[in-house]
Image (cartoon, rainbow, N blue to C red; front, side, top):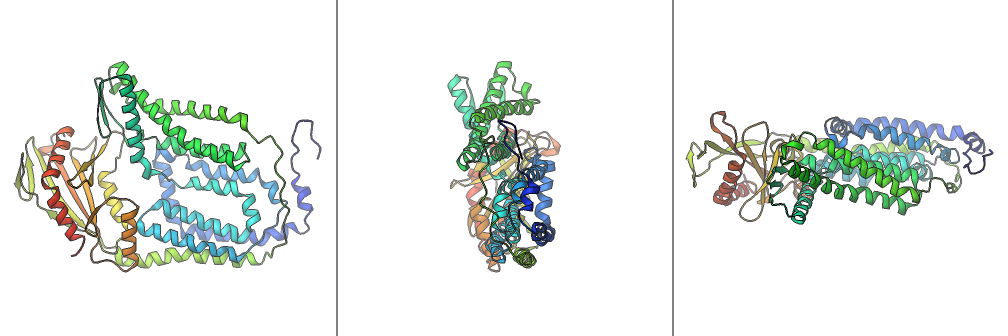
Length: 504
Protein backbone atom coordinates (compact mmCIF):
# COMPACT_ATOMS: atom_id res chain seq x y z
CA UNK A 1 0.00 0.00 0.00
CA UNK A 2 1.36 3.41 -0.97
CA UNK A 3 1.34 6.48 1.24
CA UNK A 4 1.76 10.13 0.57
CA UNK A 5 5.05 11.70 1.73
CA UNK A 6 5.12 12.31 5.51
CA UNK A 7 2.17 9.95 6.08
CA UNK A 8 2.66 6.65 7.88
CA UNK A 9 1.36 3.70 5.81
CA UNK A 10 -1.58 1.87 7.33
CA UNK A 11 -1.27 -1.91 7.71
CA UNK A 12 -3.27 -3.94 5.27
CA UNK A 13 -5.19 -6.40 7.42
CA UNK A 14 -6.43 -8.51 4.49
CA UNK A 15 -2.95 -8.78 3.00
CA UNK A 16 -1.44 -9.81 6.33
CA UNK A 17 -4.21 -12.31 6.90
CA UNK A 18 -3.69 -13.93 3.52
CA UNK A 19 -0.04 -14.48 4.36
CA UNK A 20 -1.04 -17.20 6.83
CA UNK A 21 -3.02 -20.03 5.20
CA UNK A 22 -6.07 -21.18 7.15
CA UNK A 23 -5.93 -18.15 9.45
CA UNK A 24 -9.69 -18.11 10.13
CA UNK A 25 -9.77 -21.77 11.19
CA UNK A 26 -6.89 -21.17 13.60
CA UNK A 27 -8.94 -18.51 15.44
CA UNK A 28 -12.35 -20.20 15.49
CA UNK A 29 -12.01 -22.59 18.44
CA UNK A 30 -9.93 -20.24 20.64
CA UNK A 31 -12.52 -17.48 20.17
CA UNK A 32 -15.36 -19.88 21.02
CA UNK A 33 -13.49 -21.04 24.13
CA UNK A 34 -12.82 -17.44 25.17
CA UNK A 35 -16.45 -16.44 24.61
CA UNK A 36 -17.90 -19.36 26.56
CA UNK A 37 -15.30 -18.94 29.28
CA UNK A 38 -16.14 -15.24 29.59
CA UNK A 39 -19.84 -16.03 30.08
CA UNK A 40 -19.03 -18.60 32.79
CA UNK A 41 -16.55 -16.18 34.38
CA UNK A 42 -19.21 -13.47 34.51
CA UNK A 43 -21.63 -15.90 36.15
CA UNK A 44 -19.07 -16.83 38.80
CA UNK A 45 -18.21 -13.23 39.63
CA UNK A 46 -21.53 -11.53 39.02
CA UNK A 47 -21.53 -10.05 42.54
CA UNK A 48 -18.21 -8.31 41.93
CA UNK A 49 -19.44 -6.94 38.59
CA UNK A 50 -22.77 -5.76 40.04
CA UNK A 51 -21.00 -4.03 42.94
CA UNK A 52 -18.74 -2.17 40.50
CA UNK A 53 -21.75 -1.01 38.47
CA UNK A 54 -23.50 0.25 41.63
CA UNK A 55 -20.42 2.27 42.52
CA UNK A 56 -20.27 3.76 39.01
CA UNK A 57 -23.89 4.84 39.39
CA UNK A 58 -23.71 6.27 42.91
CA UNK A 59 -20.20 7.69 43.36
CA UNK A 60 -19.01 10.82 41.55
CA UNK A 61 -15.45 9.51 41.82
CA UNK A 62 -16.24 6.50 39.59
CA UNK A 63 -18.86 7.75 37.11
CA UNK A 64 -16.23 7.32 34.39
CA UNK A 65 -16.47 3.53 34.89
CA UNK A 66 -19.10 3.38 32.15
CA UNK A 67 -16.50 4.59 29.63
CA UNK A 68 -13.75 2.10 30.46
CA UNK A 69 -15.03 -0.91 28.50
CA UNK A 70 -15.77 1.12 25.32
CA UNK A 71 -12.30 2.71 25.55
CA UNK A 72 -10.67 -0.71 26.01
CA UNK A 73 -12.57 -2.04 22.99
CA UNK A 74 -11.41 0.97 20.97
CA UNK A 75 -7.81 0.35 22.04
CA UNK A 76 -8.20 -3.25 20.88
CA UNK A 77 -9.74 -2.14 17.57
CA UNK A 78 -6.88 0.19 16.68
CA UNK A 79 -4.49 -2.72 17.36
CA UNK A 80 -6.43 -5.27 15.30
CA UNK A 81 -3.75 -5.27 12.60
CA UNK A 82 -1.47 -7.03 15.08
CA UNK A 83 -3.82 -9.99 15.29
CA UNK A 84 -3.71 -10.46 11.52
CA UNK A 85 -0.02 -11.30 11.84
CA UNK A 86 -0.39 -13.68 14.80
CA UNK A 87 -1.71 -17.15 15.53
CA UNK A 88 -3.48 -18.10 18.78
CA UNK A 89 -1.49 -20.65 20.74
CA UNK A 90 -3.76 -22.18 23.43
CA UNK A 91 -1.90 -23.72 26.37
CA UNK A 92 -3.61 -25.44 29.33
CA UNK A 93 -0.38 -24.93 31.28
CA UNK A 94 -1.06 -21.18 31.39
CA UNK A 95 -4.39 -21.90 33.10
CA UNK A 96 -2.45 -22.94 36.21
CA UNK A 97 -1.72 -19.24 36.75
CA UNK A 98 -5.33 -19.08 37.98
CA UNK A 99 -4.34 -20.97 41.15
CA UNK A 100 -2.52 -18.14 42.98
CA UNK A 101 -5.05 -15.62 41.69
CA UNK A 102 -7.94 -17.75 42.99
CA UNK A 103 -6.17 -17.95 46.37
CA UNK A 104 -5.85 -14.14 46.34
CA UNK A 105 -9.57 -13.84 45.55
CA UNK A 106 -10.48 -16.18 48.42
CA UNK A 107 -8.30 -14.28 50.89
CA UNK A 108 -9.82 -10.98 49.75
CA UNK A 109 -13.32 -12.43 50.13
CA UNK A 110 -12.58 -13.62 53.67
CA UNK A 111 -11.04 -10.22 54.51
CA UNK A 112 -14.08 -8.40 53.16
CA UNK A 113 -12.09 -6.39 50.61
CA UNK A 114 -14.32 -5.97 47.56
CA UNK A 115 -11.57 -4.26 45.55
CA UNK A 116 -9.38 -7.33 46.13
CA UNK A 117 -12.18 -9.62 44.99
CA UNK A 118 -12.69 -7.53 41.85
CA UNK A 119 -9.00 -7.42 41.01
CA UNK A 120 -8.84 -11.17 41.67
CA UNK A 121 -11.75 -11.77 39.31
CA UNK A 122 -10.08 -9.62 36.66
CA UNK A 123 -6.84 -11.56 37.14
CA UNK A 124 -8.73 -14.80 36.55
CA UNK A 125 -10.10 -13.36 33.30
CA UNK A 126 -6.52 -12.57 32.28
CA UNK A 127 -5.59 -16.20 33.02
CA UNK A 128 -8.50 -17.36 30.84
CA UNK A 129 -7.43 -15.06 28.00
CA UNK A 130 -3.81 -16.19 28.22
CA UNK A 131 -4.72 -19.88 28.35
CA UNK A 132 -7.04 -19.74 25.32
CA UNK A 133 -5.06 -17.25 23.19
CA UNK A 134 -1.42 -17.72 24.13
CA UNK A 135 1.19 -15.23 25.20
CA UNK A 136 1.78 -13.59 21.79
CA UNK A 137 -1.85 -12.53 21.34
CA UNK A 138 -2.04 -11.49 25.00
CA UNK A 139 1.05 -9.32 24.63
CA UNK A 140 -0.33 -7.76 21.44
CA UNK A 141 -3.53 -6.83 23.31
CA UNK A 142 -1.75 -5.84 26.55
CA UNK A 143 -2.91 -2.20 26.44
CA UNK A 144 -6.69 -2.85 26.26
CA UNK A 145 -6.40 -5.73 28.73
CA UNK A 146 -4.53 -3.60 31.26
CA UNK A 147 -6.95 -0.71 30.78
CA UNK A 148 -9.74 -2.98 32.06
CA UNK A 149 -8.22 -2.50 35.55
CA UNK A 150 -10.07 0.83 35.70
CA UNK A 151 -13.34 -1.09 35.73
CA UNK A 152 -12.54 -1.74 39.39
CA UNK A 153 -13.56 1.20 41.64
CA UNK A 154 -10.35 1.16 43.67
CA UNK A 155 -8.71 3.72 45.95
CA UNK A 156 -11.46 4.49 48.47
CA UNK A 157 -9.21 3.32 51.32
CA UNK A 158 -6.90 6.29 50.60
CA UNK A 159 -9.57 8.91 51.35
CA UNK A 160 -8.64 9.45 55.06
CA UNK A 161 -4.97 9.93 54.13
CA UNK A 162 -5.91 12.27 51.27
CA UNK A 163 -8.11 14.29 53.64
CA UNK A 164 -5.16 14.70 56.02
CA UNK A 165 -2.83 15.72 53.16
CA UNK A 166 -5.34 18.31 51.94
CA UNK A 167 -5.84 19.71 55.44
CA UNK A 168 -2.08 19.96 55.97
CA UNK A 169 -1.60 21.79 52.66
CA UNK A 170 -4.30 24.29 53.63
CA UNK A 171 -2.62 24.74 57.01
CA UNK A 172 0.77 25.34 55.35
CA UNK A 173 -0.76 27.85 52.96
CA UNK A 174 -2.49 29.75 55.76
CA UNK A 175 0.73 29.78 57.76
CA UNK A 176 2.50 31.29 54.74
CA UNK A 177 -0.14 33.98 54.23
CA UNK A 178 -0.35 34.79 57.93
CA UNK A 179 -4.15 34.51 58.06
CA UNK A 180 -5.27 33.65 61.63
CA UNK A 181 -6.62 30.13 61.71
CA UNK A 182 -7.23 27.12 63.95
CA UNK A 183 -6.98 23.51 62.80
CA UNK A 184 -8.82 20.71 64.61
CA UNK A 185 -8.08 17.51 62.70
CA UNK A 186 -9.98 18.15 59.43
CA UNK A 187 -11.86 21.23 60.62
CA UNK A 188 -10.22 24.55 59.71
CA UNK A 189 -11.48 27.84 61.15
CA UNK A 190 -10.60 31.31 59.89
CA UNK A 191 -12.28 34.64 60.72
CA UNK A 192 -14.54 34.23 57.66
CA UNK A 193 -15.95 30.90 58.92
CA UNK A 194 -15.25 27.18 59.19
CA UNK A 195 -14.10 24.79 56.46
CA UNK A 196 -14.31 21.02 56.80
CA UNK A 197 -12.17 18.80 54.57
CA UNK A 198 -14.91 16.30 53.74
CA UNK A 199 -14.37 13.01 51.92
CA UNK A 200 -15.52 14.65 48.69
CA UNK A 201 -12.78 17.28 49.14
CA UNK A 202 -10.02 14.67 49.48
CA UNK A 203 -9.47 14.72 45.73
CA UNK A 204 -10.05 11.02 45.05
CA UNK A 205 -12.41 11.73 42.16
CA UNK A 206 -9.74 13.91 40.53
CA UNK A 207 -6.99 11.34 41.10
CA UNK A 208 -8.94 8.38 39.72
CA UNK A 209 -10.11 10.34 36.68
CA UNK A 210 -6.55 11.57 36.08
CA UNK A 211 -5.16 8.03 36.29
CA UNK A 212 -7.74 6.70 33.82
CA UNK A 213 -7.05 9.57 31.43
CA UNK A 214 -3.30 9.30 31.97
CA UNK A 215 -3.34 5.59 31.08
CA UNK A 216 -5.27 6.29 27.87
CA UNK A 217 -2.90 9.15 26.99
CA UNK A 218 0.13 6.96 27.69
CA UNK A 219 -1.14 4.05 25.57
CA UNK A 220 -2.05 6.28 22.63
CA UNK A 221 0.82 8.78 22.62
CA UNK A 222 3.81 6.73 23.79
CA UNK A 223 5.45 3.37 23.13
CA UNK A 224 8.35 3.50 25.56
CA UNK A 225 7.41 1.78 28.85
CA UNK A 226 9.45 4.36 30.78
CA UNK A 227 7.57 7.27 29.28
CA UNK A 228 4.29 5.53 29.99
CA UNK A 229 5.33 4.99 33.63
CA UNK A 230 6.36 8.64 33.88
CA UNK A 231 2.92 9.71 32.64
CA UNK A 232 1.21 7.49 35.21
CA UNK A 233 3.42 8.83 38.02
CA UNK A 234 2.53 12.39 37.05
CA UNK A 235 -1.16 11.44 36.77
CA UNK A 236 -0.97 10.33 40.42
CA UNK A 237 1.17 13.08 41.96
CA UNK A 238 -0.07 16.16 40.10
CA UNK A 239 -3.77 15.76 41.12
CA UNK A 240 -2.80 15.29 44.79
CA UNK A 241 -0.80 18.52 44.77
CA UNK A 242 -3.38 20.30 42.62
CA UNK A 243 -6.20 19.29 44.96
CA UNK A 244 -4.36 20.80 47.93
CA UNK A 245 -3.86 24.03 45.96
CA UNK A 246 -7.53 23.97 44.93
CA UNK A 247 -8.71 23.54 48.54
CA UNK A 248 -6.39 26.31 49.74
CA UNK A 249 -7.71 28.54 46.95
CA UNK A 250 -11.29 27.94 48.11
CA UNK A 251 -10.34 28.92 51.66
CA UNK A 252 -8.70 32.07 50.30
CA UNK A 253 -11.87 32.86 48.34
CA UNK A 254 -13.88 32.49 51.54
CA UNK A 255 -11.42 34.82 53.28
CA UNK A 256 -11.61 37.39 50.48
CA UNK A 257 -15.41 37.31 50.36
CA UNK A 258 -15.69 37.28 54.13
CA UNK A 259 -17.91 34.18 54.17
CA UNK A 260 -17.06 30.50 54.12
CA UNK A 261 -20.66 29.64 53.19
CA UNK A 262 -20.48 31.79 50.06
CA UNK A 263 -18.44 29.20 48.16
CA UNK A 264 -19.99 26.04 49.63
CA UNK A 265 -22.65 25.60 46.96
CA UNK A 266 -20.28 25.89 44.00
CA UNK A 267 -17.04 24.47 45.38
CA UNK A 268 -17.38 21.25 43.34
CA UNK A 269 -17.83 23.26 40.12
CA UNK A 270 -14.76 25.32 40.98
CA UNK A 271 -12.86 22.09 41.60
CA UNK A 272 -13.74 20.52 38.25
CA UNK A 273 -12.88 23.74 36.43
CA UNK A 274 -9.48 23.85 38.12
CA UNK A 275 -8.94 20.12 37.45
CA UNK A 276 -9.75 20.57 33.74
CA UNK A 277 -7.08 23.27 33.48
CA UNK A 278 -4.54 20.99 35.22
CA UNK A 279 -5.28 18.11 32.81
CA UNK A 280 -4.95 20.44 29.82
CA UNK A 281 -1.56 21.61 31.06
CA UNK A 282 -0.43 17.99 31.50
CA UNK A 283 -1.50 17.19 27.92
CA UNK A 284 0.40 20.18 26.53
CA UNK A 285 3.48 19.30 28.58
CA UNK A 286 3.50 15.76 27.18
CA UNK A 287 3.04 16.62 23.49
CA UNK A 288 6.72 17.41 22.76
CA UNK A 289 7.65 13.86 23.82
CA UNK A 290 4.95 11.99 21.86
CA UNK A 291 5.89 8.82 19.97
CA UNK A 292 2.66 8.05 18.13
CA UNK A 293 3.91 9.52 14.84
CA UNK A 294 6.86 7.12 14.59
CA UNK A 295 6.56 3.79 12.82
CA UNK A 296 5.42 1.02 15.19
CA UNK A 297 8.03 -1.56 16.14
CA UNK A 298 7.82 -4.72 14.00
CA UNK A 299 6.21 -7.79 15.48
CA UNK A 300 8.32 -10.88 16.06
CA UNK A 301 6.30 -12.94 13.60
CA UNK A 302 3.29 -15.23 13.97
CA UNK A 303 5.20 -17.84 15.93
CA UNK A 304 4.76 -21.61 15.63
CA UNK A 305 1.33 -22.95 14.79
CA UNK A 306 -0.81 -23.65 17.82
CA UNK A 307 -3.31 -26.46 18.35
CA UNK A 308 -6.78 -24.84 18.34
CA UNK A 309 -8.33 -27.95 19.89
CA UNK A 310 -6.44 -27.20 23.10
CA UNK A 311 -8.39 -23.97 23.54
CA UNK A 312 -11.49 -25.67 24.99
CA UNK A 313 -9.41 -27.69 27.44
CA UNK A 314 -7.38 -24.61 28.44
CA UNK A 315 -10.51 -22.50 28.92
CA UNK A 316 -12.25 -25.23 30.89
CA UNK A 317 -9.29 -25.67 33.20
CA UNK A 318 -9.00 -21.92 33.80
CA UNK A 319 -12.70 -21.60 34.66
CA UNK A 320 -12.58 -24.71 36.86
CA UNK A 321 -9.71 -23.29 38.91
CA UNK A 322 -11.47 -19.91 39.08
CA UNK A 323 -14.62 -21.57 40.46
CA UNK A 324 -12.71 -23.14 43.34
CA UNK A 325 -12.61 -19.86 45.28
CA UNK A 326 -16.36 -19.10 45.26
CA UNK A 327 -17.14 -22.76 46.02
CA UNK A 328 -14.94 -22.78 49.12
CA UNK A 329 -16.19 -19.34 50.22
CA UNK A 330 -19.82 -20.49 50.08
CA UNK A 331 -18.99 -23.43 52.37
CA UNK A 332 -17.24 -21.14 54.86
CA UNK A 333 -20.16 -18.69 54.84
CA UNK A 334 -22.50 -21.33 56.25
CA UNK A 335 -20.61 -21.26 59.57
CA UNK A 336 -20.26 -17.48 59.82
CA UNK A 337 -23.51 -16.09 58.42
CA UNK A 338 -25.29 -15.65 61.79
CA UNK A 339 -26.30 -12.06 62.60
CA UNK A 340 -24.31 -10.37 65.39
CA UNK A 341 -25.68 -10.60 68.93
CA UNK A 342 -26.49 -7.18 70.42
CA UNK A 343 -26.08 -6.37 74.11
CA UNK A 344 -26.58 -3.09 75.98
CA UNK A 345 -23.50 -1.58 77.66
CA UNK A 346 -24.09 0.28 80.93
CA UNK A 347 -22.18 3.54 81.36
CA UNK A 348 -21.14 4.99 84.75
CA UNK A 349 -21.79 8.58 85.75
CA UNK A 350 -19.00 11.08 85.34
CA UNK A 351 -18.55 14.87 85.43
CA UNK A 352 -21.55 16.54 83.79
CA UNK A 353 -23.41 13.27 83.18
CA UNK A 354 -25.67 11.27 85.52
CA UNK A 355 -26.41 7.56 85.06
CA UNK A 356 -30.01 6.60 84.31
CA UNK A 357 -31.07 3.06 83.30
CA UNK A 358 -27.65 2.30 81.89
CA UNK A 359 -27.58 5.52 79.85
CA UNK A 360 -26.14 8.91 80.66
CA UNK A 361 -28.12 12.14 80.88
CA UNK A 362 -25.70 15.01 80.41
CA UNK A 363 -25.87 18.75 80.79
CA UNK A 364 -27.25 20.52 77.77
CA UNK A 365 -29.91 17.86 77.17
CA UNK A 366 -27.73 15.15 75.64
CA UNK A 367 -28.44 11.43 76.13
CA UNK A 368 -25.58 8.94 75.77
CA UNK A 369 -26.17 5.20 75.17
CA UNK A 370 -23.80 2.36 74.38
CA UNK A 371 -24.22 -1.13 72.95
CA UNK A 372 -22.03 -4.09 71.98
CA UNK A 373 -22.30 -6.21 68.83
CA UNK A 374 -20.81 -9.73 69.07
CA UNK A 375 -19.97 -11.29 65.71
CA UNK A 376 -19.58 -14.99 64.94
CA UNK A 377 -16.03 -16.39 65.30
CA UNK A 378 -16.24 -17.51 61.65
CA UNK A 379 -17.74 -14.22 60.40
CA UNK A 380 -16.45 -12.63 57.25
CA UNK A 381 -14.89 -9.25 58.09
CA UNK A 382 -17.12 -7.78 55.42
CA UNK A 383 -20.00 -7.98 57.92
CA UNK A 384 -18.00 -6.02 60.51
CA UNK A 385 -16.85 -3.44 57.96
CA UNK A 386 -20.36 -2.96 56.59
CA UNK A 387 -21.71 -2.27 60.09
CA UNK A 388 -18.91 0.25 60.70
CA UNK A 389 -19.60 1.93 57.36
CA UNK A 390 -23.32 2.28 58.05
CA UNK A 391 -22.59 3.97 61.37
CA UNK A 392 -19.62 6.20 60.53
CA UNK A 393 -19.30 6.66 56.77
CA UNK A 394 -20.15 10.17 55.56
CA UNK A 395 -23.25 10.08 53.36
CA UNK A 396 -22.90 13.65 52.11
CA UNK A 397 -20.29 16.37 51.78
CA UNK A 398 -21.78 18.08 54.84
CA UNK A 399 -21.33 15.14 57.23
CA UNK A 400 -18.43 15.52 59.66
CA UNK A 401 -16.26 12.50 60.45
CA UNK A 402 -13.45 12.56 62.99
CA UNK A 403 -11.35 10.39 65.31
CA UNK A 404 -11.67 10.26 69.10
CA UNK A 405 -8.51 9.13 70.87
CA UNK A 406 -8.91 6.84 73.86
CA UNK A 407 -6.28 6.44 76.59
CA UNK A 408 -3.57 4.26 75.08
CA UNK A 409 -3.52 6.07 71.74
CA UNK A 410 -6.08 4.03 69.76
CA UNK A 411 -8.85 5.91 68.01
CA UNK A 412 -12.62 5.55 67.77
CA UNK A 413 -14.25 6.62 64.51
CA UNK A 414 -17.10 9.13 64.85
CA UNK A 415 -19.64 10.78 62.57
CA UNK A 416 -21.98 13.76 62.89
CA UNK A 417 -24.61 13.71 60.11
CA UNK A 418 -25.58 17.11 58.74
CA UNK A 419 -29.28 16.31 58.43
CA UNK A 420 -29.73 14.08 61.51
CA UNK A 421 -29.22 14.98 65.16
CA UNK A 422 -26.50 13.38 67.27
CA UNK A 423 -23.06 11.82 67.10
CA UNK A 424 -22.08 8.15 66.70
CA UNK A 425 -18.68 6.63 67.52
CA UNK A 426 -17.53 3.02 67.03
CA UNK A 427 -14.50 0.88 67.81
CA UNK A 428 -13.65 -2.78 67.15
CA UNK A 429 -11.81 -5.42 69.18
CA UNK A 430 -10.31 -8.67 67.94
CA UNK A 431 -8.23 -11.20 69.90
CA UNK A 432 -8.20 -8.89 72.91
CA UNK A 433 -6.87 -5.89 70.97
CA UNK A 434 -8.53 -2.73 69.74
CA UNK A 435 -8.17 -2.82 65.95
CA UNK A 436 -8.99 -0.66 62.98
CA UNK A 437 -10.49 -1.63 59.66
CA UNK A 438 -7.15 -2.26 58.00
CA UNK A 439 -5.42 -5.18 56.38
CA UNK A 440 -3.99 -6.72 59.58
CA UNK A 441 -7.32 -7.12 61.38
CA UNK A 442 -9.03 -8.34 58.21
CA UNK A 443 -6.27 -10.91 57.58
CA UNK A 444 -6.37 -12.12 61.20
CA UNK A 445 -10.12 -12.70 61.09
CA UNK A 446 -9.80 -14.33 57.66
CA UNK A 447 -7.33 -16.84 59.12
CA UNK A 448 -9.71 -17.50 62.02
CA UNK A 449 -12.53 -18.22 59.57
CA UNK A 450 -10.36 -20.44 57.35
CA UNK A 451 -9.27 -22.40 60.44
CA UNK A 452 -12.84 -23.01 61.50
CA UNK A 453 -13.35 -20.05 63.85
CA UNK A 454 -11.51 -18.79 66.93
CA UNK A 455 -12.71 -18.90 70.52
CA UNK A 456 -14.43 -15.55 70.00
CA UNK A 457 -15.27 -13.28 67.11
CA UNK A 458 -14.93 -9.53 66.51
CA UNK A 459 -16.58 -7.17 69.00
CA UNK A 460 -17.99 -3.81 67.93
CA UNK A 461 -18.82 -1.12 70.53
CA UNK A 462 -21.18 1.69 69.55
CA UNK A 463 -21.58 5.00 71.43
CA UNK A 464 -24.52 7.20 70.47
CA UNK A 465 -25.12 10.80 71.60
CA UNK A 466 -28.58 12.23 70.92
CA UNK A 467 -30.23 15.50 71.99
CA UNK A 468 -33.37 15.06 74.10
CA UNK A 469 -36.86 15.64 72.70
CA UNK A 470 -35.68 16.12 69.12
CA UNK A 471 -33.74 19.28 69.93
CA UNK A 472 -31.12 20.38 67.38
CA UNK A 473 -27.60 19.07 67.86
CA UNK A 474 -24.70 21.16 69.07
CA UNK A 475 -21.82 19.52 67.21
CA UNK A 476 -19.08 21.25 69.18
CA UNK A 477 -20.66 20.35 72.53
CA UNK A 478 -21.10 16.71 71.49
CA UNK A 479 -17.50 16.44 70.27
CA UNK A 480 -16.25 17.79 73.59
CA UNK A 481 -18.56 15.48 75.54
CA UNK A 482 -17.53 12.31 73.70
CA UNK A 483 -13.85 13.13 74.20
CA UNK A 484 -14.43 13.71 77.92
CA UNK A 485 -16.37 10.43 78.11
CA UNK A 486 -13.51 8.59 76.42
CA UNK A 487 -11.00 9.97 78.92
CA UNK A 488 -13.22 8.99 81.84
CA UNK A 489 -14.50 5.57 80.76
CA UNK A 490 -12.49 4.58 77.71
CA UNK A 491 -10.19 2.19 79.65
CA UNK A 492 -13.12 0.39 81.31
CA UNK A 493 -14.98 0.02 78.00
CA UNK A 494 -11.79 -1.27 76.37
CA UNK A 495 -11.20 -3.89 79.08
CA UNK A 496 -14.74 -5.24 78.79
CA UNK A 497 -14.69 -5.37 74.98
CA UNK A 498 -11.22 -6.99 74.96
CA UNK A 499 -12.40 -9.72 77.32
CA UNK A 500 -15.43 -10.45 75.14
CA UNK A 501 -13.23 -10.70 72.04
CA UNK A 502 -11.12 -13.41 73.74
CA UNK A 503 -13.81 -15.69 75.18
CA UNK A 504 -17.59 -15.93 75.31
